[in-house]
Length: 382
Image 1: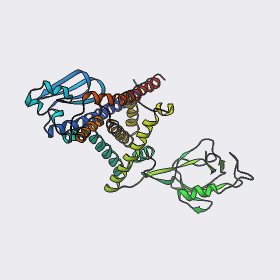
Image 2: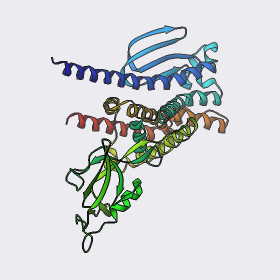
Image 3: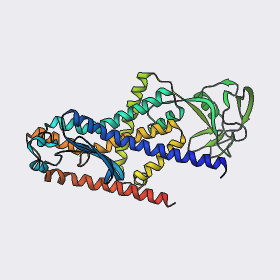
Image 4: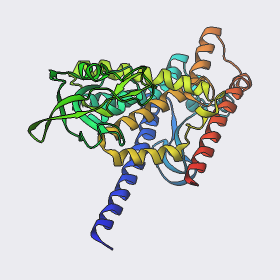
């Protein structure tokens, strides 16, 4: 086997390894949040599991079993007495530490600790990308939420469109110094090119009467080139057919924190909006993924570079937090809703009522999960 092929195979194997480890870490840290806070407030934790049964391997330490399951669809922490009916069968000393014998505030903080851990991870990953100045990470954050300013456009040429006037005239990496003899910024260069006019009425693809003269710096040399702008009806202005480049915006420790929070908020609102639209729009539904598709995309993100990969893992962590906070059992949000309801009513809500209310949400979420698996199977099948 040629050395280059062996190297490519090794790189691909390592990217899959890092992908699986990254997703496993998100699951473990989510459950660790539940686990640590449950222990801290005195609840009895029976099991800490990565993935779902059947059991592959496990070890018991004290009263808790640490287990790995065979179904890689998440993980869970089993706290004694999370089913109110179970408490009747427990001994008094064990029942005293059961989930449903604890006051509502304790149950709420234990449940919120899981999504809270995911929110913290997303924040830290976004913050790290911004502080580090990673260009790929900053561009990915800008694509994820265009309302946050994580990149600054530069007058360097990022790409030249084939078949456009600039093709063969400009090259990637050229720095635009002036247009028609006037020094420019990104905005003024765009306006100067757009100021050129076709003869007569503007129409799609018409060529300007006069060329745009571009002064550029290429490989340390200053050159003058020219190209005739053409009118683009969809854009609504004259173009020569190149994209400006970007540089990562510089952030301090505190400004990065503010931008990371803004990124999380904007991404969360978009995510919730898309989940709502998924029930009415086939186009939106086609964009949903199962754990299979997410893993494939994550592997591609790892290959694309650390900045892209960190943002993607942050996004997955944020999505885990948002989905888990939906107010339906067995999701974390469902447990919070019923603990709050109990506090407000002054008495416990029946398990039957809880599941009856949650059944609608479960059906809707199962619809999205099945849809995601269907999409991924179609993609994997070509």
